Amino acid sequence: MGDTIRELIDEQRKRVRSSNLAERFAAALLIPGVLAERLRELNDVHLGQVLEREVCSNLSVLAPELTVCMEAAERLCRPIRLVQDKTPPIS
Image (cartoon, rainbow, N blue to C red; front, side):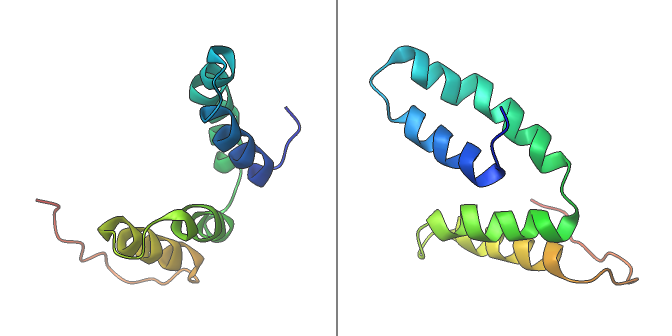
């Protein structure tokens, strides 16, 4: 597949809604592997941009997932800072 990340995402979204079982299979198993490979090639800034444009924009404004997604995208797009990580554990 020589598609761009956006094209892969659009293709997966289209196929997951298909009534054809083979199309849904491709959406569930084949496209995610190619998409993951392309995403691994991105630096943090570009990954943050994809997260913001392709994921955050499709979440409900009332969903807590949007807040998490926006924070992650913002952090990835920020220049690297040499600050100690004071991340509290997730409980």
